[in-house]
Image 1 (tube, rainbow, N blue to C red):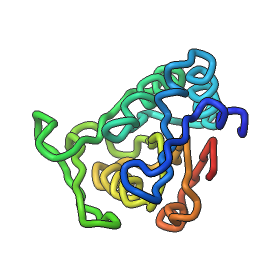
Image 2 (image 1 turned 180 degrees about the vertical axis):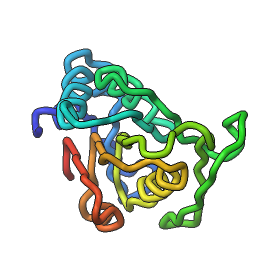
Image 3 (image 1 turned 45 degrees about the vertical axis):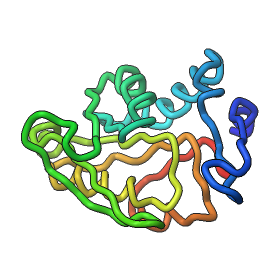
Length: 171
């Protein structure tokens, strides 16, 4: 999948000195890069039962609905607190520099549904793990994870042991 790397802009020292930011806006603005990304994430799960595709705020929202459509599945957003209008389930998780929370509508996933979780990036794995816990607390079964980018040095994959994890690009 190294061909996808050519679509990603690397921005040194953003958002702070010493950080190399992998900017996917250059991938998304290119029709070929966007199509290759969505197709490859979708193809991994073709032929498997996927009832819903979850995308986390905010860049998971870009890829997950397109993948859901391709897999003939529904799309479910996972959002920051206070953004969803109906009753929600929530999960807090740790970050390198503090903590955060995510919410999902309590009625978004039916018991036993198989749910694919999509995001642009896995770094430390906190967001992905919290999302898996939300899916499971709603009664769903995690069918797997799909990420555009994995920052392997940050160890996020270790937080998701026991799950199927697919990353298109690994740095």
